[in-house]
Image (cartoon, rainbow, N blue to C red; front, side, top):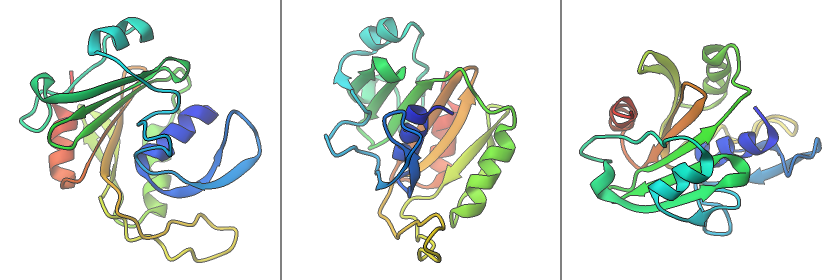
Length: 189
């Protein structure tokens, strides 16, 4: 995963871990939640429409069709062309983030498993036949055990489900149960 994609992935998770900032190879310790300090859901994002975001990114943005998230409940759309990403907010509080990725891990399940092993309450499930990383909301953290270890402080973060749909990395976030988030993720087409 590229540096920017990694930063976006961390933004969706809402955990504090070393990440690469601005393409640099120097790690930076930073806490990034589901909304960046700029108030935008993605780095370099601008408000737009679904049609405009699809045209800018060059692909149809897959969206859920669930009682908690469907087109008639969209309250905001953002696009970040430099990052190949779009974000959609729904009236239920769900946020969908879609990232165009060319360098998907060849072992997604193993990659997600290693992440889940380091985050309390996290698990690897299946969405649309693909491995999915499921992170619970309000992460209890790990107590920041060692100076050089990944420090995950207690948070009031959104839960999330992350999976791949073709070459697109899909993230469904919300202050909802993992079951609800998995159901919404399963409805994405």
